Image (cartoon, rainbow, N blue to C red; front, side, top):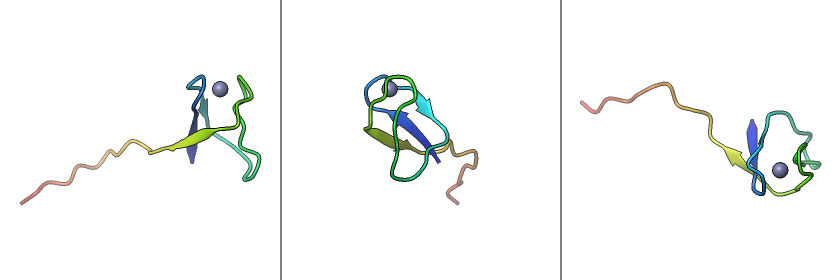
Amino acid sequence: MTFRCVKCGAEVMSVVEGTVRCPKCGYRILYKTREPISKELKAV
Ligand SMILES: [Zn+2]
C-alpha cells in the first residue's frame, strides 16, 4: 500500500503499521493513495 505525506507530498512505499511517518520531513500524517487502476470497465 502506498501512502502520501500530507505535508510535503512525498510518497511512502513501505511503512510499518503503527509507525507511519514520512521519511523526508518526519510528518506523521499520511493518507492512503489508491493504486492506479489499469482496467477500464466498459458499460455495455
Ligand atoms: Zn513529508
